[in-house]
Image 1 (cartoon, helix red, strand yellow):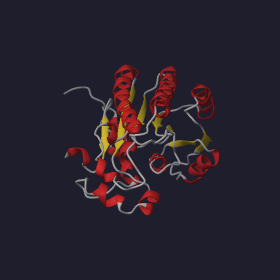
Image 2: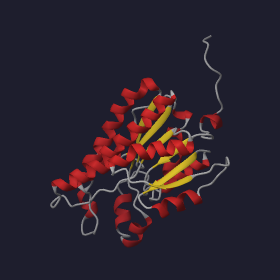
Image 3: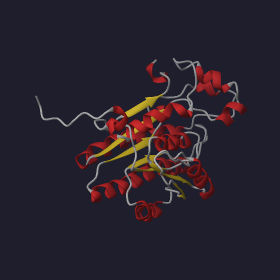
Image 4: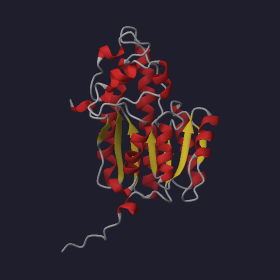
Length: 272
């Protein structure tokens, strides 16, 4: 027999009670669902948005099964100079950060025929550079505490595969080339950070959602939804709830042996 630690029950492995989770873009379609999932698992959630009122509304609506006191804060990580003071202030308020979910994104969405260099620059800064700078600041905090922690970067299946051009025919929506490029970068940045920070007990993973059009898009372009769904083996588009289990997994001890991975949540789209 080996001297292994006692096996914990699965409920304990997924329990986030006592931990602080910071999530950017918390008021968005997917960010709000992931915020709820973390709160439901017991974490104290720091919900951020570029707009203070939206962040406050998200935090106020989060469940508190462990008596948590969630925070809703205005924060724009695209403003690089604000990242270090924001984290310092947050640690002063909460005493710790245990998990970071890099989810917010504010880049442009040009068509492939009209995309400019400035579109790529803005997108890369919002979706890659800011992710790295924020992740490093949280990692430095964890190292200073000599504590393990988790970082989850939200990428996209479009960082792994190309889109189907005809899905967007004759619709007021398209698949921006800069978005594909930056999400591919997020996937590989995740791997790179994972191997460099593993010795400090910091795990870094990515989630790549597939087709998750918002309710507003579904209402405005009903013909778009079946075009997407027919490309999915499971035959439907994703719902925000479909990410809740995975974000809790990756932020909890249930994934203690998972790092450097990009997990696709796409209904099988990339399995064709």
